[in-house]
Length: 138
Image (cartoon, rainbow, N blue to C red; front, side, top):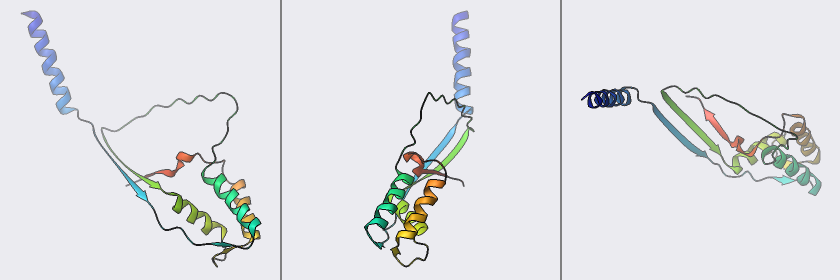
């Protein structure tokens, strides 16, 4: 009788805990795409310098030497809502063209490509490919 009663209490406690402690989470992922901008280059060297900077900015992974250890604790609210936006290759390309083509004439000159390359090289370290996911605050 005692075992049945304690089992019954545990069962009721588990049921109440499950019903009234509910974690609610929702996630929404949106894909952002746009048509690729048409661009021309002054010469082949301008195209090479631009594409080298574009690829290193968006697709190259940083190489690490030695051992890396990352420890993290995730604290989550019982009511968690997150919206993620995935940016496609066209959006990344259009951003790069906008940054490189300073006079917005649709032609990237060798000097504009060189400035863009220096800007990319001097900015933050090379981004990882998964940096395309951006958490959008509501």
